[in-house]
Length: 367
Image (cartoon, rainbow, N blue to C red):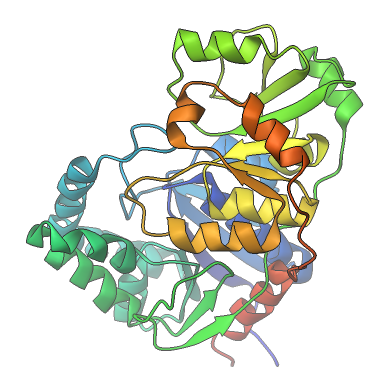
């Protein structure tokens, strides 16, 4: 297969959660590694520092734009459905302006292929320009939002916009832990894109001053509203060291914050003993490839939760912690229960980053 180089790709990433950014970065790294003459314009509202920590700047640039609203979150667990609807309706009202701006960008930059994980407006802009379109994801926003239609019909135009724009995609690269994603006409299932981290326990202990001989528990949340009483309860667990990733931070004797610039998320997760988190694609994938047990809590008003919970129960040593116990900082019972929980013997194939890279390049028009 012969291509006209350099190929220019615009890669759009939702800022709804870091999991989208992590898997997109893995795919971008695979493209950089396998196809060195491809230039990638990354378009996202995710922090540039987060992306630069995971990918190189050679052949990659970052442009700050936003094309979906995800779910407005109170913290990493709770969402505000009303505020989400207001922002989604505002996005819908601006769709033609956003499409006009983006078609101009695609033309000016001479983009050969558009990839989205998983905003839909850039896909529609590419369709209007006759540019090939690839989506990457394990769920879509029309599916997430359609659950709210039962209680509020104002969601209808938003759901239809996403559904119609997704229908114009040439190929969906469907990741594990997915729903059917019926809006997409053509799908190819790919394995996990996550890769194991490198354990670096001594390095982390030196950086943040925690005891490498104690049990390390990672609190994998972007934001978590814990009371002073809950934090005091956690601090009394002297046999454990708790690790967070900035910006999540509490100034307690046995709670330590790590910056992305110091240690990558994958290496940090590979170095701990236990992870406590909400179900999410990124943390689930990383726990699987690093063989780490997971204590997971409920995720309210997010349709993906049952799909992810089913996968947790299938692939990981796990314990469920009720949401009220999480907010109380009452981790001791869950940690003791986890010690006696059954290990899963089911493996899940990884290496989806390179498979995705090949699919993406093959989607570019040949000359």
